[in-house]
Each structure stands twice: as C-alpha cells, then as structure tokens.
Image (cartoon, rainbow, N blue to C red; front, side, top):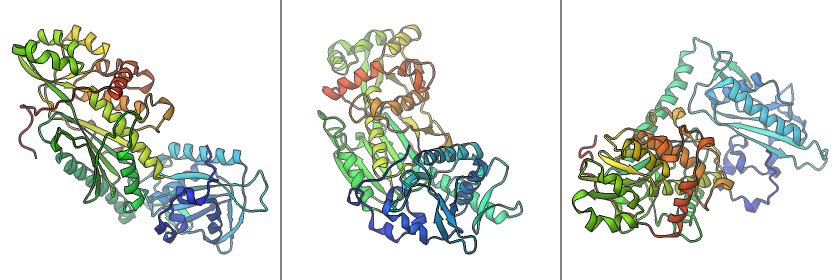
Length: 490
C-alpha cells in the first residue's frame, strides 16, 4: 500500500549528514515530499534512470539488477528525460491506483526474473506541485543500493551492469568485472561468518543456552548515526508489558557493537545478552536456559518444592521411570518467552529506524549435551508417555550454514494484531523455536503440537497461557554449569 507522507518535517528526525548525501543515494524513508523538486536537478546516467511509465516486467528487472550489480541507483517512475541531454524534462504523474499497481508489478518482476532477488526500497509519493491534477499527482521512487549478494542473474541468463544511462549485459569475457562481483559477495559472507563465530564464542561458558543470530540481507542505514544508538537504547530498556520490568537493565558500547544485558543475581556469565553489531547489521542474542538438577536419591526432600515452583512437578513421574539417577532438566519455556520479547524489540527497532530490509535468523543450542529438554505442553507429556522423556545426546552447530544467509529462517513482518501479549512476537517466535527444538532432537509435536513448521498449523494456545503466567507472576529461574559441556573451545 501507499505511504502518504503528510506528517510535518519535525516528526521525522533526520541525521544532518543525510543532507550531504546525493538525493539518489538517500534512503526513501528520509525523503520528504517537499524535497521531490530535487529530482528536477538530476540527470539520467550511471546512478539515475527516468521512466515515463513502467515498462514490461523483464525490462524493470534489468534496471534493478544493473544497479544492484554496479554501484546502486534511483529509478523515478513518472518523470520524462530530455532526449538531447538526458536531463530531467517534465513530470508524467499517475493516479494513486496506477502507483499502487506499479509497486506491485515491480515486486513481482524482481521475484520472477532475478536470482537472487536484491534488496530495494520502493515507495509512492504525492507530488506537492500546485498545478497538479488532483487525481494524477503521484510518482514512484525505486531505490536500489549496491548489492551485497551478487551477481544478480536475470531470467534470460544475463548479468546486467550499469553502463552510462542503460542496463547492459556483462560480456562473458569480462572476467575482471565478474570476479569483482563474486569476490565482494564472498568477502561479505566470510566476514559475516567470522564475526558470528567471534561474538558467539564470547558467551560460551558451560551453561546450557540458546544463541540466535539475526542478519539483514542488505546494508541500508548509517551505522555511525547517533539515532541508531538512541533507538537501540530506547527499545532495549523499554517495558514489554505494563506490569513487567524491562528485560535489559545495562547498555554499553563495545568496538562495533551496542550491547544490552540483564545483570541480576545470576551474575554476568548467565545474563541475557542482545549484541548488535551496527556495521554489519548483525544481532547476537544469548539466552540462558533455565536448568534444574534431578537426583533420584533425594528428589522427595529437596526437589519437590523446587520443581513445583518451577512448574516442573508434572515431570516427576516420568523421571522416576528413567534410568538416569542424575541429570539436568532444561526448561525451554522461559527462553522461548524471552526470545519472543527480543524478536519484538529487534523488529520494532529496525522499523523505527526506517530500515525495512529482510531479516533472517539462525540458531543453535550450546552446552546442552546429556540434558533433558522440557516444555509444559500436552504434546510433550503425550510423547513422553509413549516414547519416553527426550534426551539431548550431543551439541549441534547452527541450523543453517553461517555463510549461506539465503538459507536462514526468514522473519515475517511484525504483526501487532497477533502479538497475543504486549511487546512479544509470537508468529516469528514459534516458527523459530520449532526449528531450534528440532535441532536439539525435540520433535515438532513436543515443541508446538504440530507435525510441520508452517505458521498456519501452529497451535499456540498452551504456550500463550504459559507466557501469560510468566508475565504476571514470579517463576523459578536457576542456571547451573553442565558437567558434560565442552571444556576446550576452538
């Protein structure tokens, strides 16, 4: 749908440095309708393309891929160039319906003709001119940053690059140009993988934990802006519900990162961490898992009350039938609850920052070898009764390869209507958690009562009830080192 930008300028704080950036390189979220007259000063060429009207989908895809494979650029739909000098000549504005239709056709063209589909911004603007037709007063801006996952291949088998004012197929013998595109993509993938490994290893401490990694497909916002830090701090320290305390209570900056932590009686090693590497637009989320020690010899004296306060009392009959005399129980529900809060904060942070890039997520569980995962759902106990209580036999790596971002879990848009509770993201959380649970050897039936991971089949009633209890009452949270955790890290 269209975004009619009728708010006053003082409601859209902008980084003053954006005024020094050429109009065709500025994020669309930072452009006001009163600034559209700057388009009349542009010239069609390496970074700008004027379109009287939207051409067929194949040609639109050529323009998008040529900018993404080169140095980025701006397509103005509803503008006419002067054929003699390629300067702006006149406007050919459209109706609101035509603008909506153009946006939809561009999205379909990118998906249908480009592999992979590059990141781009697209938005309809109402032209502020006094003499405009009241109906035909709209134009569409399509901004394509330089791609970071190229080369972007057209469906006709060509790789297009920008040459002057047109999209030109790259010659097959232009090995230097092709190598540049491939090497830049490979460098970014390797850099991302190495940074993830470096950051995630900082939080390996022998405590059973989840690690979630979120990355953006493309780079958009200014990583050095003060606005990014202020918004990070705002969302990290905000309450996720009226009756709760903020999930984080410490904010700090560290090399390229903004870091939010929950520091409490658990101490630093067991704290919840949200680490945002601003230069790579990379989030590392470290969530300790609530653990309880099961010892058959003294469960009546010392375990009963602890299990009851932690909501684990229903698990005791199943544990008595286990052969293990001593083991660690990992209660996954608190981690799931915390994940829903952090995902909500991350999506809201990017949205307010004006960064609408696609976010993808990867996950792993660490230091969980020889532990028993637990969820308070009917499916869990049904499966425990028929198959026995599940047990994790070994630690596994991330769900998807770190250097293959396209294979990561795609996060959906933030859906306020399905949040269930204030300040949590249910839709993404359950999809992610099912896959994370499967990586632990926990079936999808146990984790959410479904046989597949599609959102349409997820039944979340039981877990929403548990979330409500956690949000309104105090629940037991203990965390202990796993004696079977790896002692040597490489």
